[in-house]
Image: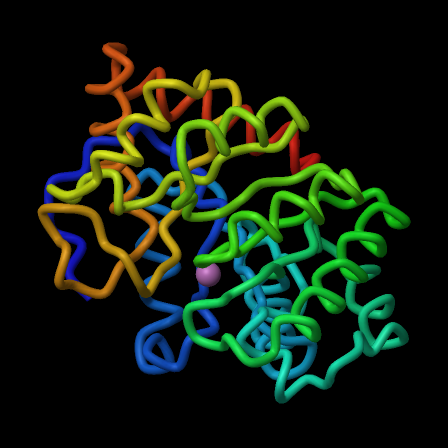
Length: 266
Ligand code: NI
């Protein structure tokens, strides 16, 4: 992994609220990369598990070994098939009691990849939102081509949390903000065709925005084809700063403060 690019973020100023360093593409370079990221402005990373077993274990291990790594545990909608149609609640409760587990995620609905399991996805998402409320944890929500149902469930169960890699409309974003939720903004905002997300960032107050990568996916321009990592958030922040007409350091500061507040991290 090449970190020699120009990143001028102040020390510890980057808070990546959504990453997947448990992904096997990092198996060869994980430790080296994480160590290096901490010297390139990255102060906080939340690894979002996609399942309650292998993925959660790998994320928790990073939390134990790296001060700046935290974990979200949950069942990703794409894994509803392999993890079962209901939540293994005993396992779930065991996991959320582990140190540095700060959220329930990545949970939600994905009608792009799996259209045939909508009811199962909804049931698993709904139950995980309820469990998050019971344990006073925020949720990190995945919503792909499922805006209506996602909004309905969030409105009904009212967890706190964020909708990661937000892809909905300006109206939906404002509706989520009204519910007290945060809008997760990643590298997509730097893409040429990102008009809709730019409108969202224009409309939503910075106090309701979180920055994220979704690493290893969705690297911002000018690294779009590369494997994504948390230091690239600098480029996402630059774009947000341009839209909001404020400095990039201010964007990093306010969005980091938002994340610390939401995830209860000092
Ligand atoms: Ni993700």
